[in-house]
Length: 276
Ligand SMILES: Cc1ncc(COP(=O)(O)O)c(C=O)c1O
Image (cartoon, rainbow, N blue to C red; front, side, top):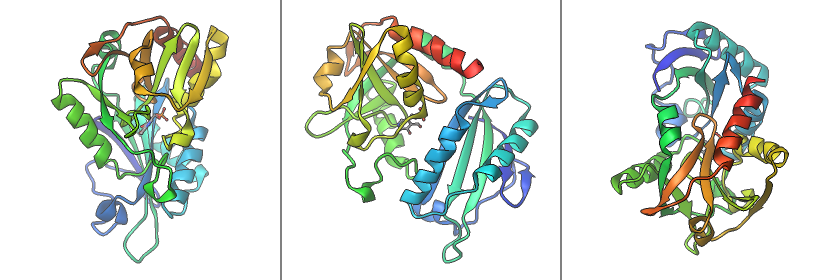
């Protein structure tokens, strides 16, 4: 995503070409930082408050003082004004700060949306299942959006190496978790299924939005611990995330999955919720 504008706590707007993180910030040294990515529709960040709450939760889990939400809002509005792009991606990074200094940083980025998202939505996404961990113990940081995402990016790269677009993590005993940057859903009849948060997956804000929107469109949602075989046997499946929104899953481990109406219906409902 190309960077359009940048705002930094204590500095305000900063030229995106300027460096803003010290070499000895623990975010850089050890991946000790929390972040959020959300989508901006018509100049308005969608579900900003939910993202700021999750940012604070992530900070607490990694032992970093959460940022002041008001400062986050102000920096976001500065950066969005400078970017001048009403449909964009907005990211917050709360870094642990310089070693021994305990002075956490806050950086807010506005970037252009990735190219080709709507083409991808038309095509659908191909997934491969890869071994992931059920992060039940607190130090495995399940459900934490920290910048230690190298494992997630390596899984996505492995999926691409195998000719797919993305991965879906599955536990050693075959339970579906989530994608590297998405939550996963599937449908049988009028029932939607998605893995439950107690599996140590991220509480996606889009996931939460879909849980709210689904009943009005005639779907009931079951959250739980489901085997990969259920996803394979689905009548349709899709992923959800803030920037990519909903993408139909057209292939799993090299086998075609059917397309259905739920992904399109809920994608339209999400857009409607976002655009008011
Ligand atoms: C591991 C993981 N799961 C799920 C999601 C989807 O979350 P959201 O809908 O809040 O973007 C993300 C988002 O980046 C993620 O990193």
